[in-house]
Amino acid sequence: MELKCFADVVAYLEGFLNLEKKTQHYTTREYRLDRMIALLDHVGNPQESFQSIHLAGSKGKGSTASFIASGLTAMGYKTGLYMSPHLVDYRERFTLSGTYFSDEALVRAGNLLKTSVGDFSFSDEWGETTPTTFELLTTYAYLLFKEEKCEWAVVETGLGGRLDATNTLQSSASVLCPIELEHTRILGSTIGEIASEKAKIIKAGQPVFIGLVPEEAKEVFLKECRKQRAKPFLLEELLAGYETRTTLEGERVTLAWSDGTEDRLLLSMKGSIQAQNVALALLTLRTLGLFGGRTIHALEANTVPGRFQQVAPSLYIDGAHTPASLSALTRSFDELYPSKDANVVIYGALEDKDHLHMAPIILQHFNKIIISRPGTFKKSDLQKLFSIFEALKTESRSTASIFLIEDNSQALEKAYMLKGEDGAILVCGSFYLGGGIAEALKRR
Image (tube, rainbow, N blue to C red; front, side, top):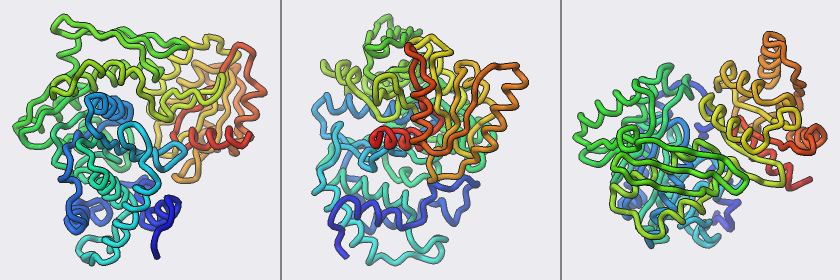
């Protein structure tokens, strides 16, 4: 049956095995590249029709990817951007020079994909006898970029790197963003193990741009660079220092480079973490000769859904879901709204996140805390999360008020009731929670 609209495309893609919902360790039955390579070969290897920059990391890769894509667009290149997850609209995952693809292009690529998959025979040796949702999403993105004649594509990994479906690119450069302990049930329990998975996006002889990462991760990345004879460019060596300040107008960033030059930017995306992200993007663009007179303005104007995004007066959404990113977010939020008693946080995180280290950060910055469900896409245990907060509250003798309100709409209403006149509401812990609150806001 022919796909008639983009909703049909999404329903088709979601009809396959969706490993984004999985929290257990890799299995070669589910995570493998031979199946993806064969699928791409069957549809004509669309990924070979454009140049690409490939990103991996625990945090910041979406923002960094978007900065790089906006820089390429400013240089006049037709640029595709592939990211995950989306906040509200599936179309956020694949954009063309900063805008959504047309409905006609989305449906045309969907039908092309469906027809190709329908007449392709999957080997039993590949474990699953049909492709996964993410494999199809990635193939779909590549087809979109090819059909719309993209010259460049900026692609972030979905999970890890080694066996990620995006690791079928022969990229012109690899970008490795900050590493933290995340997805430990799947990627490994140490920084080194996680870095080893992500390092596998490094391609032979191609430049590698490395963000501010722990020493253990840096050693892994440099070892892989030597193995692949790839030239590394380390942000810690090339960036002498930076200053950043969160204001209502945006993030004011000063980057001091080791060659004595400076960049001063007023980023539309707020949050101190964006200083590192934009620095890594600038290092990548300049080194590749993709920097021009319009680049700085393009980076300043760049925005990404769910990154310290103001969706209503005094209401912000951020997908921060690791201790370091949450710590940076709450510090930046305090710069804008310093009244701990007037502010409210709506927090929800998936089951596999580091609750024991994130909950104290929330308690340190907020006295009004609402625990709410981060969607139903992945597993979460709100009662357990609530118990962690209550135990920490007792242990620290905190006077915080903590509420468990599963329904996102009810959580938002409660937050508005609790918010002080000079305060604001921060939604964080999960992109899925952010999407749920954004939808609740539309219905309000």
